[in-house]
Image 1 (tube, rainbow, N blue to C red):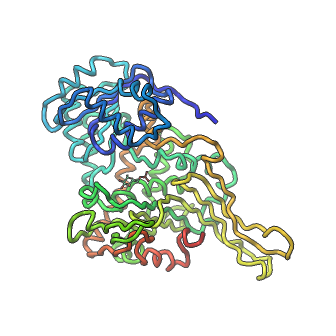
Image 2: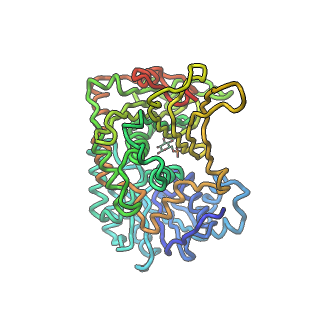
Length: 492
Ligand code: BG6
């Protein structure tokens, strides 16, 4: 099956942090793939802003090497790479000074009809100076938009300051706050599943759903990002944004439409309905962990402190939480969230666990009846499984068995799933903000997270060690088992 391509308007993309890790791993490969697919309009240009002086030849060569690192050889040819590279021009700017801005302005020229997108792939401390300079140099045209990456600060107060700085130059309609989880294929499919089928919606409430689990498990450690990560931790790095966004998509009411603000309005209501976690609950409904050395596959891997190169750190690389949405639909249905680095498998999934059947008509010899589960797998193998009880085939009386109705998207459609950044970058150019976070969503997410962070600090709730390659500290298992439930990986 061939995916449908809608060509973007002609754009100038100005990437700040163009020689950084995000640009190398995600942005340039995503743009290359979209160019290859014919989605990028002919005259579009990409300006790579970095502090160190470089020539067009050298910068293009560097991008070419990154494409070789991140795009399989079978997907590129010299001609397609050269065509893409010809769109790219480097510009040297020291963003904290006045130098280089007039050069950028001259290079962009006066082209008001073009979409002009500023992508800020930089640390949060550079967002304000960059926006100020964009404003001061008159670079923000009516067709401009700005893309900002997480982390949007380390708490609600810092996020508000960043939002204010960006808001001084761009209006909310021009601001695209990326949460790349919203661009993942299966996340989109979650909406299709809920709102393009009649089957689930009548059951989608606490009368029929016992609980929901959201797991984002990574096998990687903090790698070269230890410096940043140690100022963040899993709660800020993953839960405040990605996991809460997933929770919203599962829990929200049907939006009026899937565009404009309709979706974001519904997500916001969920964030506001999250029951605050109080200080005296912290020990029973939250778990913080930090990985120690271990063996993953056949390979011995270092612990977090070795990765960090320090003797001590109280930063969590794992978090598990029990969240509750206090509204009519979800009262009594907990949402268990967990995310961590150096866990047993790379696996991100949402598990919707239905309530058991109300009455057992079969003899004990038929076996146990497990409750239905809908498992939405985000990665690595995108798909949906609906776990059902069926009769074990063949003679021998009624014996029941629990098996999944299994739909793997890649197999079913035979198309490769685009990376989230591919979709989101194209949405920026097309001016679609639906899959980006609005300012009030960010505020509401921090309003729930801030007291947890503050409680961990004031109550000195320390990180619990876990061995790399395990599923986190044992208290994460206890967190869910105390409620008579278990994590999905232990059931399957
Ligand atoms: C990022 C986090 O937002 O998401 C990283 O900062 C994390 O720490 C990454 O590794 C996970 O993204 P994905 O798409 O690989 O699941």
